[in-house]
Image (cartoon, rainbow, N blue to C red; front, side, top):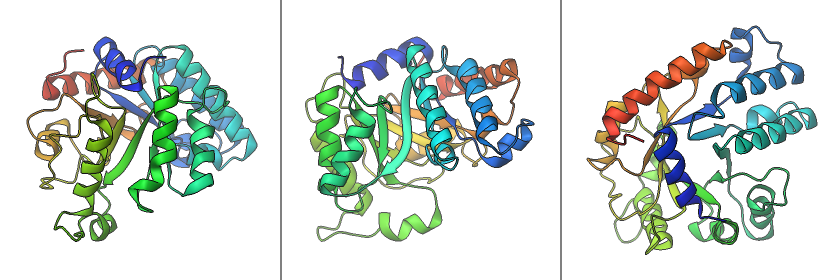
Length: 279
């Protein structure tokens, strides 16, 4: 299998630099006229697949909003993943797993091993049990041509006390994580398959991402207050590896498939203008 980085680059070249989050909040279900039940979730997921699967580069289901319905929700998530991948979309499962040893190995097998019914292209992970705790995911990504996005600098105010804390050599925790990712990705072509999650609303962080050689997911755009133009403030002039991510800004236009596609296309045009990526 091609590396995750190569598949991601190909998808962006063909469909443009956009990630759409599939976050079936109870409020969104109600807005779409759907019940807050497993059946309502299933209908929501089917509409999202029909709207985005064959035209958006990366689709990011939020696992928690499926898990809350128990086994029926997980079955819907498995079906959603399968349909999205069959249509050529890159599936990034937002699970933010972070643990140690055999537990992290089990998470890696659950999401990144092709034999798993939950197998996706990439997952989000948290490094706050130590970057070394992510090694099972990194190993699985290498073995199976998958990827991982490491939570690095988030926009929630409480994250600052941890992510901007300083380690012994004076770097911030966030910068240390970026540097660890950079080491994993050293020499990878076209770039590495381990990325970072950096919120689009964090402003000028002072972080040096120039050597990361990996993709950078930028959530928080749209309804959370971030705009595509903010990306240059956060990431600098080179946005070639930045993947803008929108959720509620687009999903709020449902359940009309045409409306969902129209808003996604408008947002994509804005992202293209800002990033300079004409894919």
